[in-house]
Amino acid sequence: MSGFRLLDIVKFFLPLLPEVEFPDEQISFDERVVFTIASGILFLFGQLPIYGLVANAQFKIEDPFFNFRSIFAMEKGTLLELGLLPVITSAFLWQLAAGLRLINVNLGLRSDRELYQTGQKLTSFVLSFVYAAGFIYSGYFDSAIRGYDPISDSTPYGWYVFIFVQISTWSIFVTLLIEIFDKGYAFGSGILCFLTLQTATRFIAEFLGIEIYPVANSNKSESYGAFINFTRNLSFNLNSLASNVLNSFSRLNLPNLTQFYVTLLSILAVIYFQNCRIELPIRSTKVRGMNNVYPIRLLYTGALPILFAYTILINLQIFGYFVYVTLQNTKTSSFIISLLAKFKLDSYSNNLGLTSGFLYYFTNSTSLFNTLLSPIRTVVYASTVIVLSSWFADKWSYMSGSAPKDISKTFKEQGISISGKRDISITKELGRVIPVAAVSGAFILAALAISGDLLGGLGKGASAVIGVSSAFGVLEEFMMEYQQTGGNSQFTQAFGGL
Amino acid sequence: MAAEGLEKLTEIPVEFFKDGSAFIKKCQKPDQKEYFKIIRAVGVGFIMMGVVGYAVKLVHIPIRYLIV
Image 1 (spheres, rainbow over the protein chains, first blue to last red):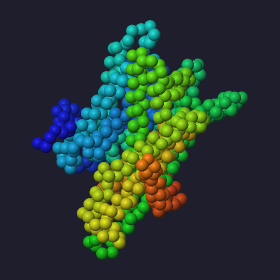
Image 2: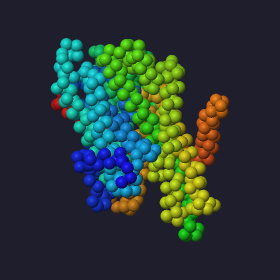
Image 3: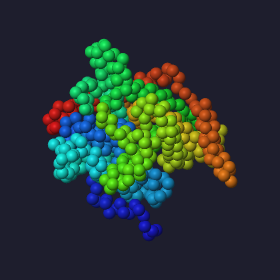
Image 4: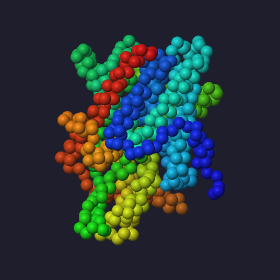
């Protein structure tokens, strides 16, 4: 035995945790399509409301995390309250731990890989318990629990347990849904696929959503979709046209048109950058005259770096909020609390916005006006995102399976070399190009996400950036698989006429 | 000493910007025709996904009234 390994602790939990079995045989193309769509629909069903909250609870909950929730598919007042946050956080924790050699794991070994995946799952479960308990402890749901008055009634422990069980169970369920993807039943990585789905759904719902919701603390009601709301205001109130137009661009309780345009522009920009690439000329060492190109994309690491940056930021916010509430409950002096954070409730949208304190500097602003008003926050926030994502991209380009060393190994196996270079210098040549591509790509994406945020996109620009660039990954795997089956699928036959 | 440390600190971003901009200059960018083709392909997929997702979301509304 070569000492004690952290991974061995996981072994104890191996028989206890629910697990998706590896597929026994090759999953056919059609089956994979069905698995992908079905898991997507199941995921969307997580937006059912939590039992025990009042109707339209999403407008009554006082929400301190409104800046970031769209990136992690955290839907207020629904089963997806935690969204993909526990899964994403645990995935990054384990990948970083393995990549920075904090834990000793050999992913080439089957037993180690199994333990690694189980560890990731276990962390995700534990994290979802922690988040759920923390949310309840901090009184997040208090203003929306059915038949409960925070001032006169005693603590509703029964409801608390009920809500805890609901959100943590659903979070476990989502983790297992993602495992279906990761074990090869469906296309792409589960997290990225769900993020894409969530972004697309949100994009349509926010533009064209026809549901009408009451505005919190007033007797008016507004349409959910920004465009629908805009046209409705136009036709009904010609007198107060200017204020209505302003409202449809700046309302915070429901999606506004600014967020829509930010999302749209981000999508177009990502598609452009996604197709920037450097083509290395390669030739076969076995067959004479076989020349081809090997593309190295500018967005080499895809959306992962900015997803990482935002994961760090939101965890900072959430745990910061928990600490803030704990400090308040233990009656610490208000000076210390105000150093950490100071929240102000916006009665119109029920968002708990930060106004000062340490946490304030790590949030995005709600509009361009606020961005210009607080330049220090803007600079701190922007540089945090950029530095975090560039750092991650640099590390990731060595950690993942597509590091320069790995690629040159596959080159050698397939008898390929770069034109005009000797075999030995392939790794060197790739090592010169890949990290630069990864870091510049991450930098550009981060800049894009931030400029969306600074314009008042409230994380929606960022979520669009992540969603679209992950869509490319899924699409690529889909196309590759499709070409391998030779287009011989029952779906093509059924939908061929479309 | 301090000045040396500072120099090193500024050196990394400067070098990175030099490398990065050289890389981007060398990059093959999609031309207009290719760009529109991709936008159309991705756009159709994205909107289709969104509409299906939103339809599922609309199904929720009656269920919401049933449970709450």
